Amino acid sequence: LQSGSLPDLLVSSVPTYPKVDSSMGVCFAISMVSALTQLPVRREVGMTGEMDVRGYLVAVGGVRVKAQGLAEVGVRTMLLPENCSDDD
Image (cartoon, rainbow, N blue to C red):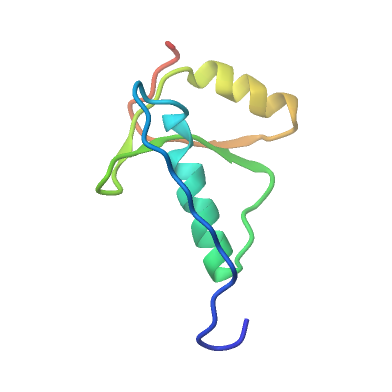
């Protein structure tokens, strides 16, 4: 990137109720930071976690299933907020 320029970026969000895919909030935020800074995210690291409207991390459920899914595709490191649960 040239100094002072930003990559083309479109962000679209539709509020839904009940919450759908709220566990991807951290992934979405990290992806946006990566796109804007052009710093790649390591492919061998998985993450999950909800972000509230103030940007704070919120615990999510279904951690065991998410970890199993990541392991199936070769991910060995998982980042998640504190106080998450195995329950869905």
